[in-house]
Length: 141
Image 1 (tube, rainbow, N blue to C red):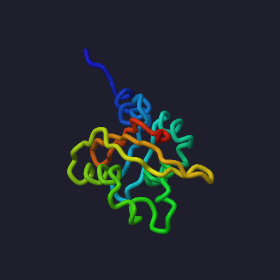
Image 2: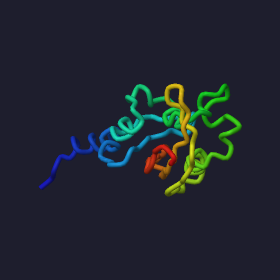
Image 3: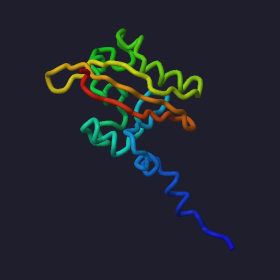
């Protein structure tokens, strides 16, 4: 007996369906330019943004990192050179190796206030993309 799984396969190939099945906030990024392709519902809720405010933007812009607002921009500002999050993402694209529980404190700008936020992320390469899972994003006590 044969089963036609074509409808299942189409659903399994839809990045949005796959991402939304993940419980943690997750971003799907492309390598060049290093931008978010899409995000799951948990990520939209965590960052208080719709997909249109995330798709095509760099990670720091989604996190509201203060360095993403500079003239050089996210990942290119001199302050980004030692960013553990950026470096983990870049290495995952270059080496294919995942990074787990990468911790950083970013200065986050919301409205007119800048506040340090503790962030923890993990990265994983999937095909030509990388999944960025946000484990923690909260004001640093």
